[in-house]
Length: 152
Image (cartoon, rainbow, N blue to C red; front, side):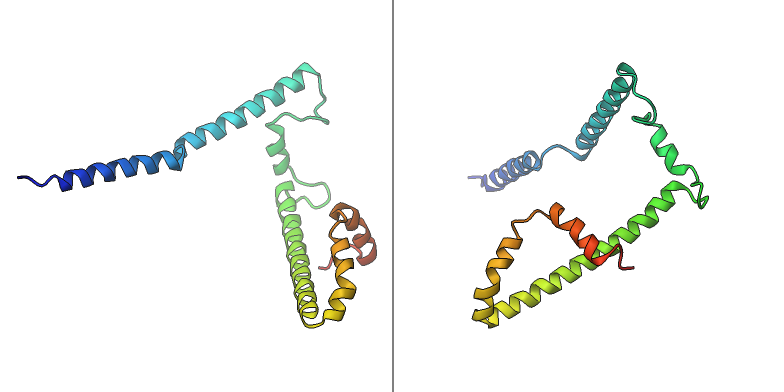
């Protein structure tokens, strides 16, 4: 009597592989094609709206004009706009990381203080909770006025 176990095992492995393939979703090529199609559709709608409503180049430039503008030199420094924006992005990232570090440190210190002092926790925690209900867009202008612009 022949043992059919290896054939059964191979069949279940093949079914498992097929199931994993369908669970992973579409292939990378299919995703890339979908991304290209969406971007092309956005570009077509952009240009059709520009022509149909006679929108000026100042208000809605052609799509090809946007990357070309990044290559044009600035009047003030002669540096290409793309490099200038990259420098400014670096500055913004430094400030965001510094703000994150300061906020994390302040949160950690408050957490330790509240954990060790029930009196301070009962006294200050309602204000901390109330501060979380205020939208950050309402607080940000006040912080800029109080602290000024820029740390670096």
